[in-house]
Amino acid sequence: MSLETLLDRNKAFAATDGVARNPKIPFIPNQLAYIITCIDPRTEPAAFLGVDLGDAIVHRVVGGRVTPAVLRDVAYISYLLDTKAPDGPWFELAVIHHTDCGSTFLADPVLRAGFAARGFNEAELAALPATDPAATVRADVNILVTAPQISPNIRIGGYVYNTAEGTIDTIVTPTRAGIR
Ligand SMILES: [Zn+2]
Image (tube, rainbow, N blue to C red; front, side, top):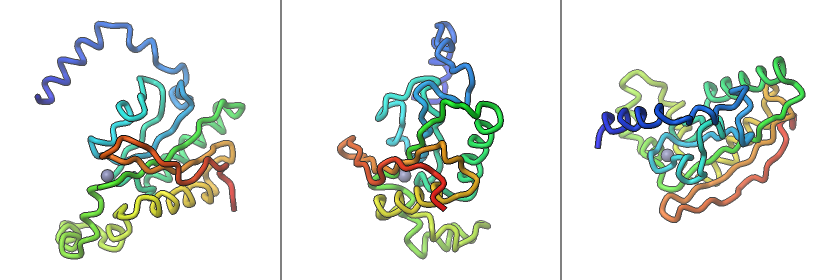
């Protein structure tokens, strides 16, 4: 197995009519879903949520954490909808953290200091570990629902995915943005 295997799979894909599933407007995905989750290969939304081409905007970052860069990207899509398609339909956003997350290595002060020494801000790194994914997902949903840049047309929920069981727990039932 290698990247070459995946490129071969692309040739097979390109030979089908797969792109017919592309949404007409890319920021209005077919299942009206925007998913923020971890880069971990075990937290692959195509597998555990059955996300197919065009179904969702999938935004993957370490831990699925809502950093300022993630907030900016969500705000950008929110802005595009506001200006290009204000009547919607609007997507629902799911923040999904998970058990056994690799971001928790950053909770180790020695490991974190070593990484910070490569040119990163240690205080920012210290805020990243999803050691208690139910707690971090609540905190990150709160960042999004209270951000003035996110449209109140977007509903935002928080979930924890169990990588050992394949199950999802709802931590925050979807709430409209704009609680200010
Ligand atoms: Zn993770």
